[in-house]
Length: 361
Length: 135
Image 1 (tube, rainbow over the protein chains, first blue to last red):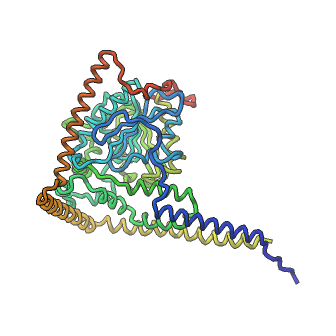
Image 2 (cartoon, chains in turn green, red):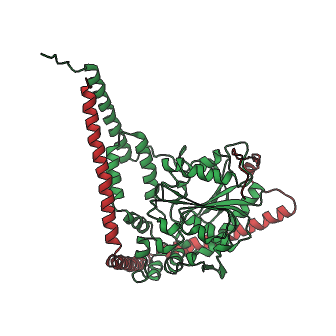
Image 3 (cartoon, rainbow over the protein chains, first blue to last red):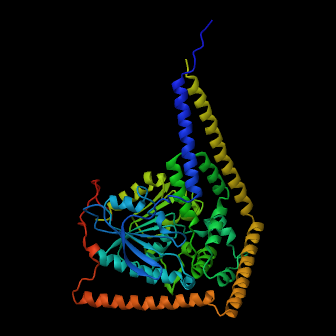
């Protein structure tokens, strides 16, 4: 008769200890989440505000290397969300990465629109705020030229600026997840159809578009994400790295900001309905945004699974500009994971740093 | 002989992995389903109607609240917004004066750059690769 080996008591104890430790971590993380304890630090890369105007802040990040590339790079944020997605948390910050790669980095943070900002239009941002910011960059660096890096709507601002001022000393233009063809905007395009949406009534009643409305419309693009996110969180509650990442992204997603009313009206009327950026017929204060006049090197990075600025809406960008040196890069990931998180660390950041380094001398 | 505890653990892991895979697939299917529903014209009309109703309610609430606050001689939202606008204008004027002073100072050779930004690293960095610049 074959002898039955008794179970190894030490291994059983080790396994039990592992389970207990995991459950203790689970309980601790759960409590931290419920009580909102130990909030992860965000947007903390050391910086100086070198220009401010209304809610606008122009940040100059403190260099992390003794030698930097001659041409500084200016990050332009979208109006839709808070800019710290580009400076997420130490070790997971696009800004920090660029500083470590030897770039002199600035960021235009539009701030949180106040009620009186409902009157601001694209013209204010592109013809007034941006040129003033770039003058300050020139003063701070002593260099005449600069590169622009725009994320989402920030990329649209970059295109509008350079399209109106082709002579502006923009050495390079990097656009990330930047929609240009609004017919490719999927559900957003359908929901904002002129047959259904009375944009004037909405803007006149609300002034700035309420953050809650913005957040809900983004969530409706992938209605299950939030709930499945909770399930995944409970499943991985024992994993501090996962919980940390979840908390950072949850904070960014839910800290939605209002959207300036007049810009919303222009966005819907001129971009969504008329698709003027794509047709190259957009004018701001009577000045034409001529994308063909953009001749500086252009890097365009798109996300394959972007649900906010879907691939069909971003794809035509480089075909619209007049540059000879232009490159399209399609990376795996979504709208947010393109610029932040593990995906971005491995894919977008090295690509942008490498592309800019050769063109920032 | 296979480790009894280990195989039990790997069995449990496999089940969890299967469950996670199912979760991802379920999420994708439901999202696709909702996107199809929300992409229809009737949903578009519904969303438009919701926005209209939201605007009407918002306007009604604003007007009601304005009347209420006026009765009690308290500042309304539009009063505060107007004050904010006036402050904004003052800030704009100050910024313009500051810019003019800065320009005058620059013209007369006085440096006005913040001291922090004067601690500049050398702007001589070159890329590691030997590729020649394309710009």
